[in-house]
Length: 217
Image (cartoon, rainbow, N blue to C red; front, side, top):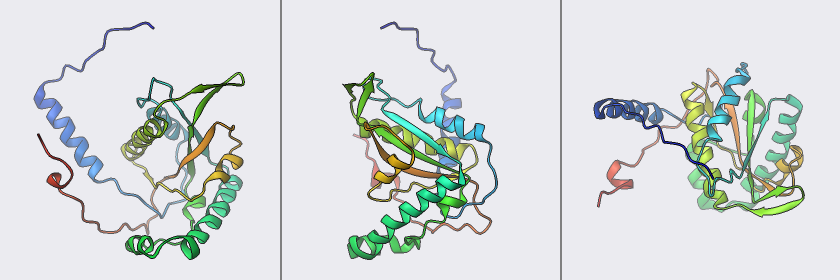
């Protein structure tokens, strides 16, 4: 293992405060959107977003993730049909009433038009073990690592002026088949990305205050 000197950003404390405050304000404006425009978005932007996600830290630097960028309309149609099949079962049979009550404020149901309307659908896979030349190698803190990468991805999407939605139809095994992924990968998250529809609406939500989610000891 070789090392190199870490290049620290030598901005002044005031400059760091301003940069952090600006980023906080930007991220507080991020919202999950369910109504997408069909307008095209540069593929280069999506590739950059994925590269930012892949720069996230991971257990032992094993980088246990893979991203499939879906832009083909036929494949998006397959994903939508498979997702709606699972979601219809969830909403009509499997979900407890308490869960449905919590979802009511979002106005969601088993119809998932956004999986076809969004110009891109990103499928995030977690690699439950590393597979090289037919041999298995252990990956560490897989869920934590992939979760952090997804956080980077969502921040990058927002910074790029786009919108996204985290979607988790359950079970998601159909994604591994549609995307032809190997046996060591499991679908982790489904993220449509694009521009918001002109008619897009988001619910008015009450967020916790700083003292509700943090203390200083």
